[in-house]
Length: 620
Image (cartoon, rainbow, N blue to C red; front, side, top):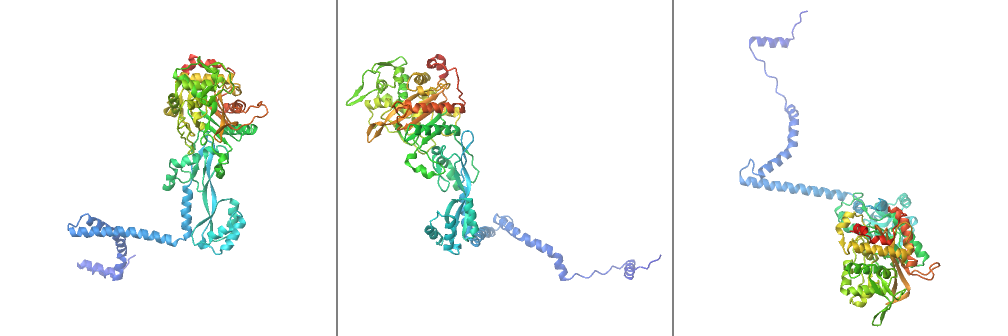
C-alpha cells in the first residue's frame, strides 16, 4: 500500500534536497527557563553556607588572597561566626529550659542525684550478700503547682499519719519549686497517694540501703544516711576509697561498681553471735564480744559485739551500749596479756622452758603488793607459771628484762599505738605517762595498759603463726599478700614454745574447758578487775579467753569477752574466765571447725610433741 507523507515532512525533505537549512525552533519563555534552572538554584543555596565557611577559612589562612588586609578581615569574620554559633547554641538551650515546667527541671536534678548515690554490694567471703541497694519511692511536692494546700495536707496525712500536719503545711505553703515530703514510702502508700490525683505531688525513685542479715555483722558493715552515704563501718570506708568523688563525677551510677568482698563468713558470724548471746544470758553479763581471725593472713572471719543493733535501723547504733567493744573500746586484757610477756622472755634467751621462778612471796612496791590469785607459794617452773597464771612469776620475768626492753617489745607487737583497720572507728590504747618498774610488773600480767581487744588479738596471732605480726583486715587477703605485710617479732622456735604452753594449758591448766575432743585447741584465760571510780572493783570483772586451733598447725584464733559475768549454777561461786569465757570458746570451736575445713580427729598428739625438732622445722 502506498502512503502519502505528511505535508510538513514533505516540505522539510524538499528543503533538504534544495540544500537549504531549517529555521531554529522558537526560544523558550522566561518562566520555562526558571523551572529548568530551579534545581541548580536550590543546590547553590544549600551549598552557599559551606562555600562561605570554606572561603573564610581559606582566606583566614592566606589561601587564595595574598593581601594582608583581606586575610585579617577573613580571620575576624571566622571568629565572629564561631562565637555566633556558640551563643546560638547557648540561647537555644536556655530557651528549652525556660519552656520546660520548673518542676520537671527539679525532678531531673534530683533524679540524677538519686542515681549517683548508688553503692556497691558488700559480700561475705563466700559471695553471700551482706548489703545491697534497692529502689524505693520518695514523696515530694511542688508548692507552686498546688491548687489547694489544705486539701493536699488533709489527704496526705490520711495516707501518711506519721507526717506532722503543721510542718507539712508549712513546707507546701512556700514559693519553692521542690520540697521533700517523705523519703522511702511503701508501694501501698505510693499507690494510695497516686490515686488521690493531687497536682504538684509526685514521686522520686531512690536507692536505699538494706542489710539482709539484720544484726549479723552490723558493727562491721556500719550504716548509711538518708542520702545513701556511708557514715560508719565498712560503708564509710567505701566512701573514703573514692566513691564520693565518683558520685560527684557522675560515674557511680546504679550497678556500675564492683562489689566489695569482705573476709567475713556469714555462717561463722551466725554461730559466734548465737554462742555469745547464749553466754551473755546464762552468765548474766551486761555485754559480750568476740572475734574469729585467721592467724595466717590476719583476715577477720567473724566479729560480734553485744548488745548490737539492726543495721537497717542505724539510729540504734548511736546508743552508747551498742558500741563495738573490739575496736572502739579499750580494756585491760588481764592474764591473756601474759602470753606476750612469756613470748618476750623466751625470745630474749634469758629464759627457757626449764627456767624456774620464785613465787613464794608477794612482790612489794611501796604500799602496793602483787599477789597470785591461786597462790602456790613455791618455786615454779616456767610452764607452771603459765599453767597457774602466776602474777608474781610473770612480773619477775618482765622485771628481769627491764622497763625499756618491755616497752620496746610491746611497741614492736603493736600494743602502744592506735590500731588502724578498714573500720574508721578505733580507739587509742591507754598507756602510762610515766612507765616505771611498777607499771612493767602490772602490765606483764594484764593490768595498767588498756588496749582494743582486736589489737591484742593481732599480737597473739604472731605468737602462734611462726612469729609474724600481720595487720588485721576485714577484706579478703591471700597468704602471699599477708606475707608481704608481715613483720617478724619473735623467732620461729619461740612461736613453737608458745604453742606448747597454750596447748599444755588446755590439757592441765585453767583452759581445760576449751579442750574439746578432736580439735587440738589451746588457749589462755584472762580475768581483769574493772576500774570503777578510779579503783579496781573486786565484784565487777571482765573475763576473756583466747583460744587457738589446731595447735600443731594453727589456723584460727577465737577471742571471747564477757563483761561483768556472774557466778551461776554450775560455776561453784566463781565468775572467772575459766568458768564462762573458756567453755563458750570451746562451743564455738566445735561448731565452726567443720565450717572452716577443720574436721575433728582422733590422733591428737600430746603437748610435748610441739617441742620436737620436726615441729620447729615446720614453724621455720
